[in-house]
Length: 418
Image 1 (cartoon, rainbow, N blue to C red):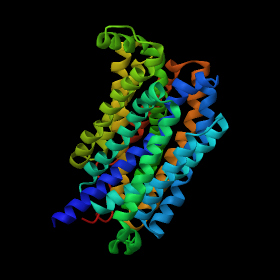
Image 2: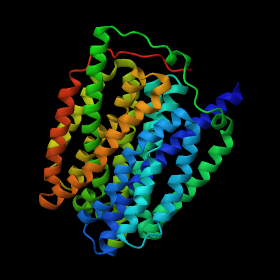
Image 3: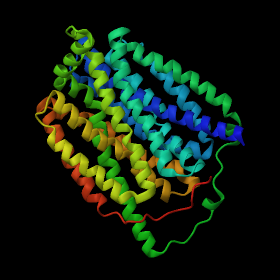
Image 4: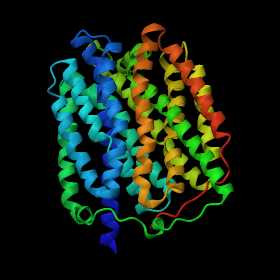
């Protein structure tokens, strides 16, 4: 029994680290573009965003074949492919010499990174109980990857160059993929076996079908809108802080060192401030996970949506300490909403098709992520970030209105296996 428990914990740890690396790889370029390449290559920040768009498009579209392969072949096998493929792609991107080469590298990273969400979440919801807390804990690791992208990349820019920000995590990911393959080769060889209960088709009543359709519509609508909010905030926050928190960053460094902060070191301090906001915001998911298991999706979702409306509307015109505090508020809301749709799908989806259902959800989510980058670039180049904050406040209000239509109790499919 202790060996089984230890193996389960190790399996969950690998899945969590995979979520960390997944988001890290997808957001390294956000800080590289904002703090290094725009100066080193003489390309504007808005223009550089265009090269990231295909990668986020791949991040969404390739989730569907990844989920299909996972359900037909092996979910654990696909996880090993994720680690090795994303790692090798990141290493190759670190050797890019032109924006076009970076864009190609980011596209391939996106292809392999697309594997994680439909496959990793299907494993989590099928293998363990306490779905809300498991998804929330896994989500914290993913969001720490978001946070660390700004922190680690800023540090690499100052101390080793932007290329190391791709190469070093890539090497780590390849090593983890080989270890995953060796440790879980029995599960990989066994393949994915559908739950016996999932083979039975229960006839749904007309009332239940109506509720299921309503909840499904709300899930997909809020998935699209929350993706716009999440992508806009996580990708643009390093640039927002670069513009609005330089005084705060210099002040912190002066207090610590007793001297002024050189421009070459600002990237590290700005990355650190972004890390603090991302890290604190990400731990909101643990609270959300506990509340989901206790209160259900409707009340929790409405709370985090309302929080975003208030803080996004308050952000225009703010700088330094006040901007930092308000950014912390809207990021707590943005991160807090992440596990809710996954929780609802985990409760309603049949086990045999779970990876494919998650894949459809993430195709929509990450396609919206890709579409958001041109929106951020267009709004920033023409009106600046204040207009973006008002757009995001409106988006959060749309979520609030949609979530108010959720039933108090979700229609539940077969329970996950122990």
